[in-house]
Image (cartoon, rainbow, N blue to C red; front, side, top):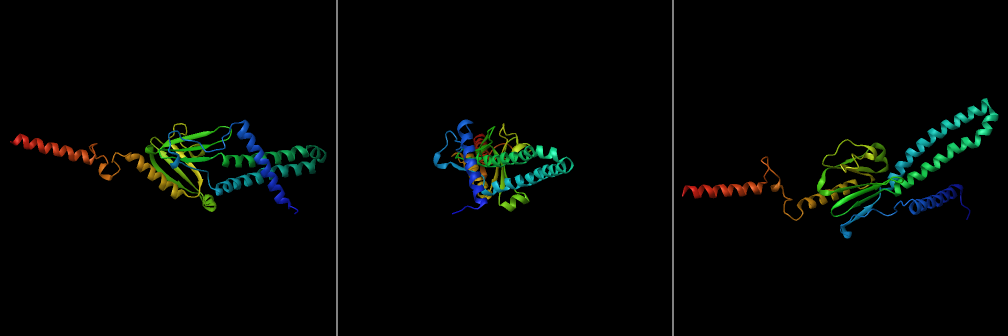
Length: 250
């Protein structure tokens, strides 16, 4: 069976990528498995990557940048050939290298970014890992969660992906990679997921479980009142007051 050029190119690129990915994981110590959470119940740990649509989303911007950059370089090369064809011929290998090599590097980097992005949810906390040269890991305990929001742009909607933003106490403005104060753990980003509503519901359930902690404070009657006491504490104080009044009146 004779392969058509497109299939041959696809197989060659996949073979090349697997080789580069192997070098990264072996010699640059880039982990190829999801991060672990110490003390977590293994039966309640869920690890997943962004959806396939996120990879297509990244490739869209890659192709836009490729056509813009290579188009400008190609036009400049044609102008050089028209005005100084000898110099243009001499510089042809260099110009084509400038157009092709960055494209290959960027294309591989996109796949590496996708393959090194992991989200892990355990029974106590969640962890997000991303990065190739510099690996960033953000861990958020469920009891510190203040808000869980979902955002989706028009292009993300086309690819069927959304971002889940988890804010904790002290969260500020969104910064690089959509995370706010990543080192301080003020917020975390689960980008490019296709089941955002399911993830948000799961996080809310885990947040409620972590709040109760088996202490029975998960009900609404236990919310602090304006005085700083819970409803149960206020009722207990009223009982003590009534008992004291009866004792004094005797």
